[in-house]
Length: 212
Image (cartoon, rainbow, N blue to C red):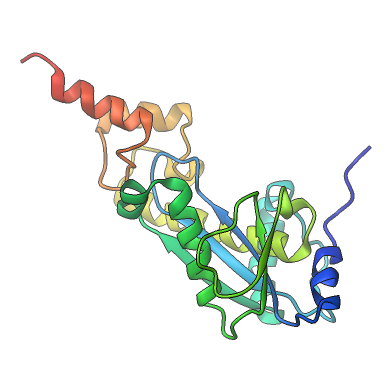
């Protein structure tokens, strides 16, 4: 039996507790070997919900693109990013949380409650919050944030692919596909690769220790 679509149940619980500006937050880009990790925060208007919002992974690219254009017209959206340098410096989990915190701070109006996808809250949030495991399949606000973050990052990686062709980032968004691994063999490690991630770290170590 198919899972029910995301709804406003969690937002309703927060609203019943007296909160009014409830932001859903999701990140994308924890698994890739290259590129930043990016997050979005979305405060939906409960009286104006775009139809068809769902977990970004369950939507076609065309539907994601249409919602990416529509959601900012009817909702408040904040954007946050953590760079490759920050990922290498503080680790991917902490960088993901940093991107989420920045997305919340970027909202036009500060939220008074946040619904965070996952099972761990970012530290030092500026408002009360709760985590929701698989939140992008359960909360409409988090699902909207997942759409915004995915399309934003996919477009970002297309831009990086134009600067650094040969890795297929315009198709794989930096994830460790066969095409990406072949590109690494042909072109080596780019400035946008995450050097602390095992495949990249191993490649650099092997290069460093090759006998002349």
